[in-house]
Image (tube, rainbow, N blue to C red):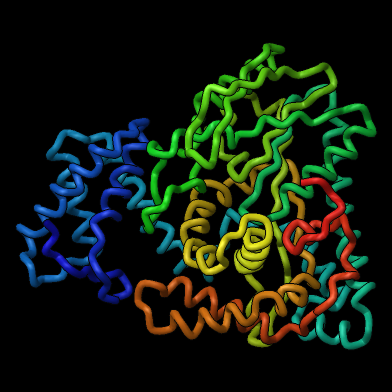
Length: 446
């Protein structure tokens, strides 16, 4: 049916026209208003394509903005006003984010925990690891064991601080939320906090929200057409809220089971209730997303946020980006534990990051405490494991208009890896380090 072959991106690049991306965008708008009829999204996409052909013919190449205008028009003409509103709101949000990035130099972001970052930067300067060259020089001097020890100590201090804050409110707190973007170190941190709480007679009881995913065919998809597990709308938020409220009120719930192999939430139900000394734990990317736990008063929650807040400059004067650090962590973890191709991790990271910026990062300053999981020495560990892959990606994607984001991330990260000295042996890393979550060899049971 499709006679339109290409579109013009905002960058001016001309790329192949993919109707499935329109379907996915429409479906995401339906999901936002509580409807999950994918067939209806497909039918509306067909109408959008017909409208585009009528407007532009076979030879004219429409722009992304013109296609989005047509989607809005078709939704309204077909009686889907609420869906059109959700689509417009999302479109406006994306536009605002682009403008916000352009203005970042003149207007500080409210998403950044400035006080915490200042403390980390001050520590990095004292340690001489606030630049890649400073880190390299200390490694040349044979000081790697000392660097590792001091980094681990700062992380453990953050853990202790969080536990002490929970302890002070232990008679009030009924829920602990441990949140943060992908590969921020939530699993290791949760284990360490849980062990310390047990020493004072408290026990974390996990409500695994992964079991609350909708069936796969009801999931929104990303731009590649893959099912999007990164968005909170993939979860049955209503059921999560009901179960949380029941647990805190002393009731027993029946936890569903989600089978990732079949993509189905089955009838296998597990009874769960809280003992007097138990606190319900939400360990989730989207734990701070208000709609996930809106049924529970903030007064009885302790909200913890994790991020590798590394404060280190490269030779060019740019700071190492936290998102690039987490990208490398996730590549190593997924390749080791999930047999997942690192190339796919890179290609999909743009959509992971997009979801983070909408549903995770904006809530960082609503947390009660922030833990920094960055270890300056980890860059040296990642170099020998990943540098050849990044060189390959830079070469492969440098002329591909569809892979601009992947190329930019690969090129930026490659520059960091080429600058840092390699650390070939990880014997200096403690077996219970948060870094072991990504490079393997942990003594902790994940």
